[in-house]
Length: 149
Ligand SMILES: [Cu+2]
Image (cartoon, rainbow, N blue to C red; front, side, top):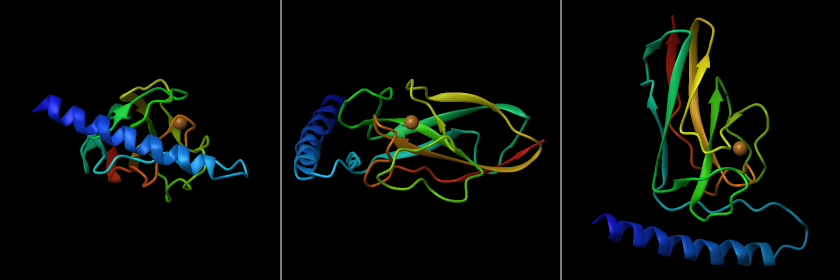
């Protein structure tokens, strides 16, 4: 069962490599091209839970289904690294590397410990490719609300 699933992911990855190579070849303007995400891939925050009350310093655990985590700069199809959006009102721009307004986990980390002031905050994950560009379609978690007490 598990092997079969891996084989499907591998096949899908090869398909998307072919696609993105064609895309780059067709562009003579030096634009970035978002890496294709894999169909059905999902990012989610494992903890804290939506609506949870947490202390000022707490751990955020990142979840990812249907794609893999790889450090920034590593060209491996079907992978990306996590970015954490804290109290962000909008999503990153498609096709553009994410900046310092989001926290990058380019080492391939799947959790972090952060400190936030007391009050209500939102957290959201966005996956980015080796160049910190959101995938196409963008892999975004549900935005959760937490209360820091
Ligand atoms: Cu990044």
